[in-house]
Image (cartoon, rainbow, N blue to C red; front, top):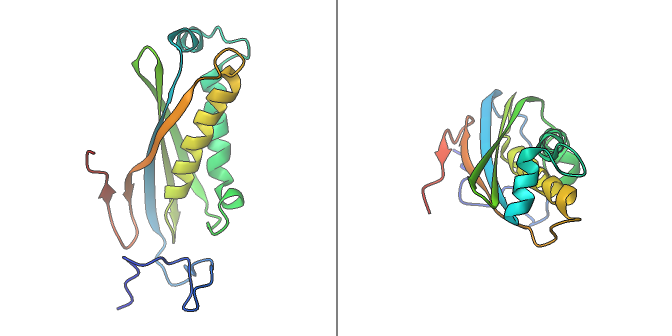
Length: 163
């Protein structure tokens, strides 16, 4: 049995980078969820939540940016496969008066997973919030971007254990 777990699959036997051949992999339903945070001045978050940002609906624009990023991940991450996305869901939470928590879930039916799409979408969503608010708050901090859950494929389900 050829078990790729525990080794870097994006390198061939000679050590050269290559795109993993997924021809023999089963086409299955797969999903991934990633999260991240952006911390800002309380006044900045209050303006975002009130829809009072000078640039408009910050979280609405960031939602669209996340979807676009998920759809274009293969153009940004050199060895990612182009996959058909079945869905991209973005959720916002506000754990305190200075933090926006972003969660992105991506879904596909394909021979490879959607973890990179979820992570890319989360990153771009938070970068978009920064871009739209930087004129008033350049001290924002993006942090905690990480995979939380994946399911499907040969390796099955994986959940992040609490840190």
